[in-house]
Length: 156
Image (cartoon, rainbow, N blue to C red; front, side, top):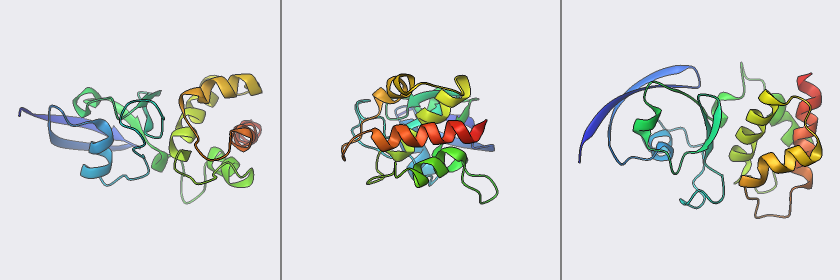
């Protein structure tokens, strides 16, 4: 299997690694770098638990090759908090009980982060549309939507 040396900046830290051509970005993050906040839910791009930002755009890292991240910026859920303080999105999920079992939470947070970067005042319908590619298998989306609304209010 061919090997490639990639240079990726993840959560502000530059990384260089040699990876196989077929290594998925999610496995690079979790297995090579130990960033286990990104979850693997389905391996088919269906659930969104593996969502990270690649050059600011949400992508499902279970269907992106690590070599496709070469010379790009990746932001994972570990990159949200700063200096020990929760990001307003994390705080919103905490305060509005949007965590539920927590498995989908990293993907939900990263999708919400991307939404609030481009639309700081989304409607409920816009929030629901944005997170429609992220599945919650617990009870529903009411508290997740409230968490994003809470974050939007606190980011102003």
